[in-house]
Image (cartoon, rainbow, N blue to C red; front, top):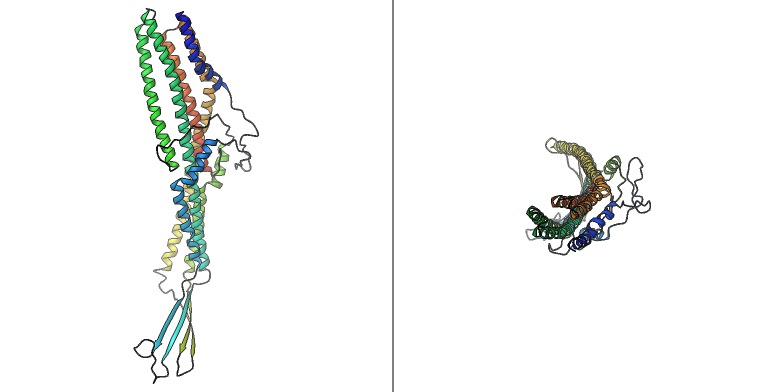
Length: 446
């Protein structure tokens, strides 16, 4: 009766853990040609032909982040600030209106005995040398475009951070569930060991070892719960919510296809990486700045119109034309040209450095993704199912006295660790893909 009770308890407890694990982890992800993103190779560029189904919960969080994240809002206002400079750069200086008189000390009173006494109204306008205003507008436009791509980079970085926090939270939730199931099972094993020891069929070492493993599981679960709280707080901060706000449940995650090669990712990044686009616009602006600096060697002009009212004599009209002579070009225009040229060269070197660092980052994340993907496949098709069968065999052997209790515990802990590793690598793959997205400038997975 005692042995039969043990069998019933073990079968009931192991059914969701062992059998369920063998079924779930042995399944391969279905790859439907209509439901998965495809990589279309046109000169190694990535084209998203058909996106896989989005994770509804994750998509909702991303939308909240894009709407509420303060960093995104700050970058939006910075872009608005720089964009407002464009019409300012293109406009003329304000005209000068002057009103005066020639007569008595009393304001605007004329001298009756002097016919030249009169009142004057004049207006003048500074005119830059032709082409200067256009170049100033182009410089300002290039700066605004660069700021916009910086804003776009911030948006993509925030989305990647949301995905990273989300998938980290997914792993921790799954890990806590696995540890909880294992702890319940180990608690039953501990009771069985205690009963066998009390009737003289076991040894005290089995009981002590089971208690130690049980305490280790409690410790592991405590750490995982702490990490989960931190992950939730991080996600709430990205969404600009209270740290204690409920995050909700995660979508169920399964292995997904990733059909892009490293060459495709590199080519796409060179064409679409927002930071590179911003850097190119800065280079373009620096080129316009050089042209503008050269234009500054040419003189600016001013024109003016004057009206003179003299009651004792006919009214007079005057027209003036002025020219600014750049006689101090050695201290002003020439250093300005040197400055603009140096800025252009600096921006070019920054572009080269950004490209080099980008290639490294893409390769690093790509290797992380491919490694995690191989491990997920290995765990789901081989290691976890084998560990499940090994635990089943150990349970059967323990019931008939062919396997000791320490071997049984070892098999249980081994299965636990591999299950945790499976979910960790599944999360790591998604996090690597999420980190690739802001680098290549396109959405690889919704």
